[in-house]
Image (cartoon, rainbow, N blue to C red; front, side, top):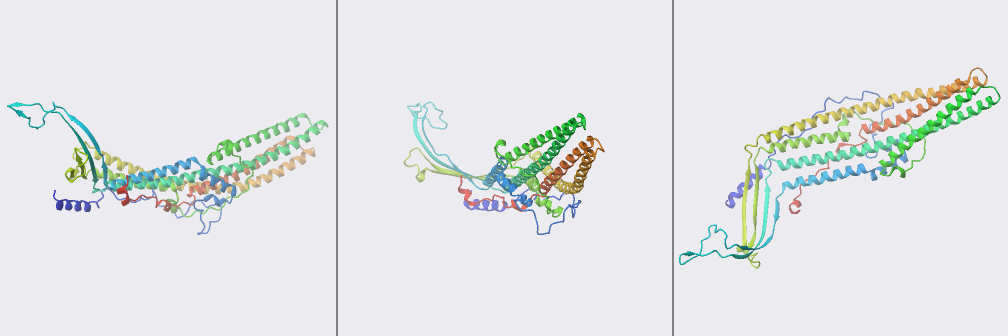
Amino acid sequence: MRPGALSIVLALLALAAGCTVGPRYSRPAAPAPAPDAWKTQPPWEQAAPQDSIPKGEWWKIFHDAELDAYEKQLLQANQSLEAARDRLNQARSLARVATSGLFPQLSTDPSAVRERGSGNRPLNGEQPVIINGVAQPVPPYTESVYTIPFNINYEVDVFGRARRNVEAANATLQSTAADLQNAQLVLTAELAADYFSLRELDAEFNVVQESVGYQRKGLDLVNRQHAGGIVSGLEVAQQAALLDATVSQLALVQESRYQYEHAIAVLLGQPASSIGVRVAPLQATPPPVPLGVPSDMLQRRPDVSSAERQMAYQNAQVGIARTAFYPQITLSGSGGWQSTQLAPLLNAPSLFWSLGADALEPIFEGGRNRANLAAARAAYDQSVANYRQSVLTAFQQVEDGISNLSTLSQALTTQHAAVEDARRELTIANNRYIGGATDYLNVITAQTTLLTSQRLETQLLGQQMVSSVYLVKALGGGWDASEIKDQQVHPQAIQILQP
């Protein structure tokens, strides 16, 4: 091929390289229009428009310095989070691998060979030496061959196969970045939930311990009365049984606390036996959570963004499958120096070279390419369904969180009244028993009622705090999809010179 003709071909290929087959990506619509407002009204006044969940450190909305310290430690030492960061680094490196397909590939394979040719070798076109009409045997030979070859290959991205690979790799990179943020959100929410559950158990332990105290006083009272012949041994046995059961509850509460303490240790990247969380009964109220509007969920949830980026990846895979129906055009060249002697190896006569182009067009593939395209389209449709399901789940979790907090707020108000009623009941039962108007069973019943009511009140407060944590988690923890837009790898000219 003459240089002028080769230049024309290269120019045409460069113009054709702007063509990319396959569907353009656009985010599919959500399964249904997002409502204008949340269905359930929250049990607090809506925050001002400028208020929002703190970005990156959503747990600071609870204003608990000890929780802040634990969350900071989790971000630094949690091994599951470290693994998610490593997956992100892996995805970034694989995206760089994809960009390498846009550049020529150059290789070399120098060699030095010393060889001896057989005297009985096939002539392969050589003319035998004839002396006096007789063909003489072919003499053996010994020679050295020195070669410094270079090979260059470049697949012209006429139909966008390499660009689609980069597009798919960047979509995976962004999806992995969203997965990292989702892992961080899940782990930090789990830590906060465990922390408030532990604090609730501290408060519950105090309630049960207080009950043990006044039940022991009750046992002392009936023991003295029994010694004076005022009451029978039945009242003593009843009060002792109640006290023993309450002490058992105290041990069970402590055991539950140990479980949460061990879980917190693992979240902080520590052995379960190496950490001790100080005792501090829960004395908190759920903060108002800025809800925003339901349509914001498409941008605020990292898991939803990850599912959306998976759609972009599968869309690029459809494009890649489509390029299999078009020619794969490759430019290649080779050259270098070859000589039987080392001294003249780099001289001009030792130079060799070749240039060529190859266009591989599939004709009959047994339906392979058609089946691959159908599989890619099905995978894309599956990713759309997964995305829409993640949107529906996000709406559900927020609505569940709001309604749960509303219900718990009402229940806590009535339960507080129930505790006060139980206190009055116990006071009246004690007074009536001392006055001889009733038996001791009413006192025991009142003690049991008060303990049950106090524990339930404490548990409801703990559930409120945990539900607040999960509501913030359902809202995305202050995250925004714009945080992964910069997670992309672009081809750079310097890659031509990189191994």
